[in-house]
Length: 293
Image 1: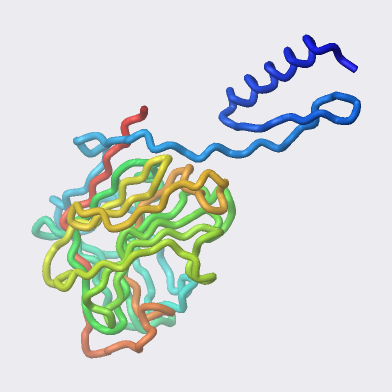
Image 2 (image 1 turned 120 degrees about the vertical axis):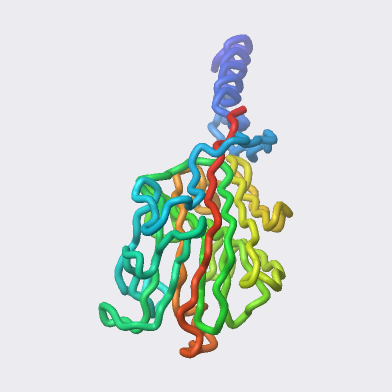
């Protein structure tokens, strides 16, 4: 049995040590009077009101002509179905991704390649822009027609927590052509994703999404993923402080731009073969760093 002075000194030291690592716990006495360890409880993250630089740290204004800049973009290529039973073959040529008159065009076409009946492009900033937190802003005009499935989205560069969805996904904009007036913002994690119908998502009505340019944006901080369409907040998913299964968004992510054809969602009501080619046009892509606090 320790004396009371030693016991309280030890209890005070333990409390200070736990506080220093941002966790809380309590201690109890055993019948013999010694302390019993109680597992700590994670502290819910606090929103520090982070803001972002006003000048982009990375951007593409698409002022060149021809192929997208190799300094900014790489490509995912092939026709594997991409986990969604999609019907396009992604290329890395100007046949499907090209720049002219200040606009990037990602064009899906009805043509055979690699055993698939359509071609398109899936552009990525992996290895060119891999960022932890910040603001991603994209001004785009979407394709239309049954069977189109354009997306502006983000994936983890290193997959530190495992394969999809364990390491997370952020969908800044998704659209399916058979549901013309609606645009979607979503996040997917091991705890919250669409295959178990727990995804965090919103649907926003944008009637002219395919006839006018709109600004699609994510503000990503340690506290939350927030989505904005034309500078109006439409989505928020806050860090619950329960670990990576709910919040894997503490690792570097990169940006993807693509137009899929068909697939589980895009082709849910079939494909209209009279509409091709279809394209997503992008006026600019800008990334602003988060200012640390």
